[in-house]
Image (tube, rainbow, N blue to C red; front, side):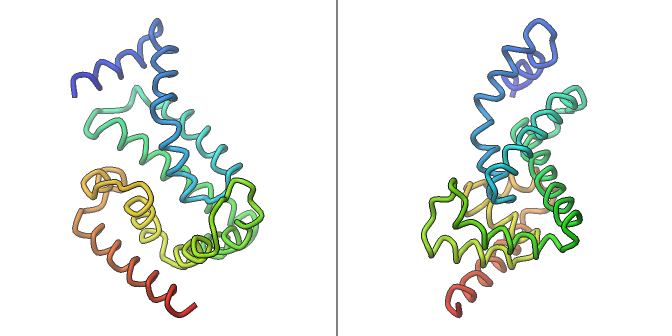
Length: 180
């Protein structure tokens, strides 16, 4: 934990800030990209959200209190940015975020960055039908293997509620996969 506090001080200090931020990018760019990509599904949108995430991290690092791990704090920002992005995009297109997610899944085959097969496409369709919270929990647990304790810090939800959300999501996905 002391190592993280020292790193945050490097990020905040003008003389060490640039090198520390490059390390932050190097360490977190890939996992945050993957996390955001699972939420917004589209590569170009993911890049936009990732950029916004790092801008917010940089701007608000001085406000980071250290109550959680830096990783959790950054994931919370990335999650909120991704959800905000989807909601704003849905609003611009005069649709719901669920309908937008479904449309994005339908367009995944044409996405040159999507290398999944038919079963993975079907899984994405099943996930898109879940309520937002269940989608997040399922994606974080299934794709990123994030522990419930870390997820609790990121999403601000109890471990028990997260386990229940995951269980319900899995059941709904299994039902969809069997019937479609």
